[in-house]
Length: 228
Image (tube, rainbow, N blue to C red; front, side):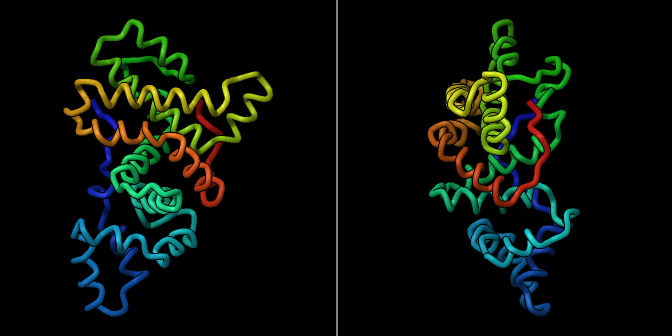
């Protein structure tokens, strides 16, 4: 079963590193030294935090040469650090989440054919009643992830629905996100996917993470209407 995990950094492509080198390196010797540093876990983030890399990413044309994982990692890391969230595992996990959910089918059909298309969190909660223990773990994790995605990237959508239809507000999404991520992080299957610490930690700072994504989306992202 595929789950979202903090794997953005290990999935960076040669084109991602070429982009960084094109921004920061002057000459072949600097480029080679930069590639060596980017291959080192201890130094990679310090290089990616460079203001020139961030601004060059923003100034590119809409069709970027970099991977989606790279783009979201740079954006999330900056937004989270500005919000006082320094844990790179959280940056990586949330960037992976945004990368996955940039595909609509991943939001609406999280478990492939094992569940029908579901557009609302309440549908997922209802599905847990008849699910196996294993399936409840995956559904819990997905509910928490979707709650962060929608409340973080589409807060205006939530506000409009709340005003027009008396639909749940941000507080509902925060409560759902915190509770279901905490449940998933404490599930016996979480260690199998190396998710116990990062998912529990994200639950603990859900509101802070949500607000960091709000600021990021407002300043830098132009995404379509929320999928749910």
